[in-house]
Image (tube, rainbow, N blue to C red):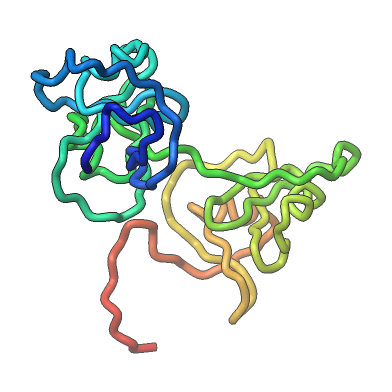
Length: 217
C-alpha cells in the first residue's frame, strides 16, 4: 500500500483489511523522509495509517496509547479470522497479518462473539436459558432470545439450567428429534439438565475431531 503521507484525506487499508475513507491528521514537513519503514495504525478504530513512527508522532499521536503496530508490507491471504493481540488488544484480520505486526499466536485471542440484543422488556419472564445462533449467544429467557431475532425452534438450543451438578467428563451427545435440529452437550448429565433424556440423545463426535467424508450409513 502506498501511503500519501502529506494528504489530509487518505484511503487507508485498516489492519482489519477493509479499505475506508478516513480524515487523518498530518504534520509532515519532510522531517520524516529518511525514517525507516515501520508502519503504525492510530486513532479511532486504528484507521489512520502512517508508514513510520515519526509520521505518527508528528500527527499528534502517542504511539504507546493511540497506536497499534501495523503489518509490514507482505502477502497475506484475505481470510477473515479476526484476532485481538497484545495488552492493547490490537485488531488484525488474521494470524498472518498479526504475525507481520510482530505478534506470536500466543499473544492473540479471538474477539468475543457479537450477539444481538432485542428491545423487548423481558424482566417479568421466568428464567429459561437458551443459546442461539452460530456464536452460541446466551439468553436467559425465551422472550430475550425472540426479541433478539431468533427462532427458538430453528436457531436455539435449550441451555443447561442453573444449579446443575454434573461432572466435567467429556462424552459428547447430540439431542433432538430425528431429522430435526440437533443440540450438542458435553455429556448426558448436562443434556438431562437441559430437558432431554437418554432416549432423545445419541453419542456425538467431540468438537475438533476430523472424520473422512465417506458415506456409509
